Every structure is written in C-alpha cells, then in structure tokens.
Image (cartoon, rainbow, N blue to C red; front, side, top):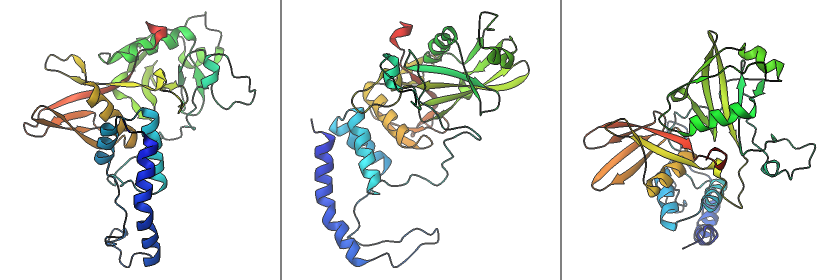
Length: 300
C-alpha cells in the first residue's frame, strides 16, 4: 500500500520542472469571456478533477488522515480543478463560526483555561438557538436522545420532549417555553461536519445543531465518521458498500454541492449531493440518499 507522503513527493518531483518552465513563460496571454485563463500549452501542470482525486484516494487505499493531507497539499499548489460555478455558501446566514469539541476535554485532559473549543465529556454535542447567534447547550439526557435518533437514517420526524423543571438552565427553558418541539431531520443542512436542523416550537421556528470533536490527523475519530445510505424499493435505508461509502464521503468533503459517479455491476449511478439523490444514468431511476454519523459507544 502506498502512503500519501510517497504519492505527494513523487507528484512534486514530476511537476516542479513544469512549474519553473511556466514561470519563465510568464502569465497567460489570453483570457476567456468568463475571465479565466485560456489554454497555456503543455507547460501547465495537470490538475485533478474531483472524480480523479476520489479515484486516486481509493486506488491508493489511503486512510482518511492521509487523504486529507493529500487534498491539502494539492490545494496549496492550486492543483485541484474547481467544480462548477453555482456552489452556495457553506455557512448559514448570520451564523457564528462553528465551534468544535476539544479533543482533550473528552478524556478530561484539557487544562487550558483559554481553550477556544467546547468542552464536553462526549465527542458530540447538541445546541439550540432562536436567532442563529446565541446557542444554548442541551442537557446531557437530551444530547443522548438526539444523537441516538439522528444516527438512525429512517428517522424523518422527531418530537423533542419538554425539558421540565429539572433543567437548571433558565435561559434555555425560556427559549423552549417548556413546550414540545417538532424536528424534521430531512430539512437539515450540513456545514462541514455540523448539522443544522430547523425545528418548530410553539409556532416559532428555531434551529438545533450537532457539533462534533475536532479533527485529529493522528487518528480517525468516531464522531467524525459517517455512513451513507440509499433507500430501496421497500423504503428501507440500506448502507452503501464500504468502497462506495468511502468514495461518497471523500467526494462530499471535497464539494458538498457537487456530483460523483459510483458503479454497481454494469450500472452507473450519478450522485447529486445538493439534492441528496442518486440516479441510474440509463434508466433515470432516482433514489434518496442520506449521510448520518456512525453510532457512538455511549449509545450502544
């Protein structure tokens, strides 16, 4: 099995002479109508499309950490092709920067009083807001309840029970008004690995979000791992094969609004992440797909 460092070193040694040759040739001499550089001849280094990069990661059997390193290095050298021109902003309007859970806090090892990340005993966390600016923490019992239901792809709709007087957070109680809340998972929006979901509470629209532990290049963390599902003819949600699951996740991380092709036998399927559907390119049959976190050991 090749490693990403070997792949990158070989790639750099092959492209460095081309880059130097390009510098001697100077900037491009023509621009197309969209304002992008026109053809630059054989001296331009080859850029990877999304599908090519996904196939490369799969062929080299790279771990998630090595794959992310490869993507990062290719981005630094501008060797990734931009996919489409209609990508939407990945941050909801008026939303503050998304926080992550401190890796060390889960094991109780973070002693940094100025740590900018959220501290939690669990590698996932749930919050609620009324204005997309101020977020309130759910108590642990509700966090576990939401995580358990969210990890199950068959759950479209959920009723969040009232917190009751046992909740010590008065601000949270005032926001939720001690009323039932209707949660519709299928209306959620992914931003990085954070799920934003609208809820209805006492005829008002609020939002909840799922936060997970910070990414760590040293190991793959369960809270940052996801499983992809498709809906069969009986409306059951079936996990994709492992190879397709990995391909979907890598492609999604590269462009959450993009497309990727997967293959099953003689059939080819086009997956549209913006609509969360897969389409058989021959029969045009469409099926829903879903991305859900892998259940954590706290829920087992």
